[in-house]
Length: 100
Image: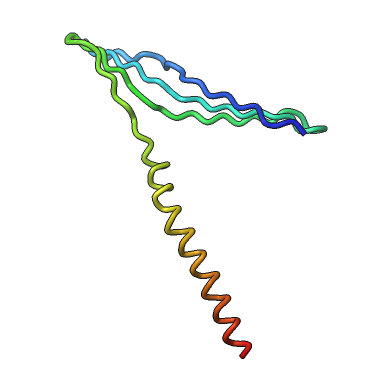
């Protein structure tokens, strides 16, 4: 079985003109592709906006777009694992004491 082929690239999107201001968005594109014997090629593409460059009369300014979803899920994952482990321990302790 062949491992999936992963490719990450930063792509500049179409510029947006707003009067004197020009916005240049950029997108991070993650592509995963692998072949399944007898079924063909499977490809998954994820795109996420990462930054915008704002060009104005006074110069250019780069602004990062934070990934709040990943940050929130990562923050919630640790307590969820802790609660699951505590529940398993509690169930095991109750079963152990119930057999006595």
